[in-house]
Each structure stands twice: as structure tokens, then as C-alpha cells.
Image (tube, rainbow, N blue to C red; front, top):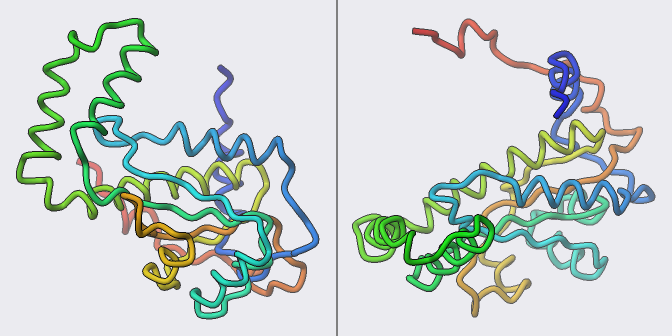
Length: 216
């Protein structure tokens, strides 16, 4: 594997910003979309349980309904693809077994050899004290995916805008999530910035590294 050059990474992160105006005429390629979806799949998660799902919305009518639940913000309808990050609300033994079976299949192992790992996960997130905080735990995992998604998009020259300015319950209703174990956490439009977006040319404002980082 060839590593990404340091200046390439920093340049991409300096280039990206929370895009306020997307160009609705420009759509990302299927190859770029596939790469972004793989970046989501490759997101690290606690225990490897991946307690999230990602909905990719392209249908204009559905985008319009979601825009109404997003304070009327234009990014929702004008972006190429709208990615909605969902978090699991409860972990069950079946969810744990699903991961155990996947590990065994991918690594050529037997599920019974993973009994100790299974017991730890069940005892922590299904029957243990952390079971009650699964929604918050899963939401934090979804935000890890969001960060990876935006960094990956920047390296591909694609614009994004993380959006918490929405009504999660309305999103859940519109997307028909009430009968599922998942709920809306955050949305992230992706596409190409419009030339008239004044925020694209503004200098990025960050505190210096010496103020934010302490090395001991």
C-alpha cells in the first residue's frame, strides 16, 4: 500500500468546509459513490459490532420531504447524494451472533472458538449495565463513521456538510424507521460546491495546534 503524502492529506482537509450551497446539476460518479460506501463499511467500531446503518437518498421527492424536516436547508435537496446516519437503539444476542458468524466466516474460524468474545459482548451490551446506554453508544459510533466519510470525500475532491440541524423524529417518520431498531442521528449531504457559495473562499478558522494539543 502506498501511503498518502502528508501534504496531500492536510491540503484536502484545508480544502474541505461545511458546504452551504451545492450545485444541483453536478452528480458524483458511481465509482466515487462506491468508494465512499466502502469508507463507511471500513469504519472502526467498538467491538466491531457496527451498530449503525447508512441510508443514501437520491429521490428528489424524498429529499424534498426531508428538507422540510431540516429547517428548509437547501443542502438536503441540492446535493448529489444525501447520506443519513442511523444508530441502533438496542443490542440483542442475535446481533452479537451475527457478528460472531461473520468473524468465523471471514477468518475461517468456528463460532464456538469465539464463545468468550461473545460472552463479553453480551454481558456488556445486552444484559449488562451498558445495555441502557446503547442508543448513546451507537450514536458515538455513527459519528466515527461520519468523520471517516467526510475525510474520505475530501480526499476524493467531494464536498460535504455534516448536519444536525434536522428533526430526528420527523426523519424517522418519513423514512419509516419506527418499525426498525435504528433511529436518525445526523445527515451528511455530499456533492459539489456551487460557485456562489461564499463560504468556500473564507479562511478556515482553527485554534493553533499548541492550544488544542498537549503532548506528555
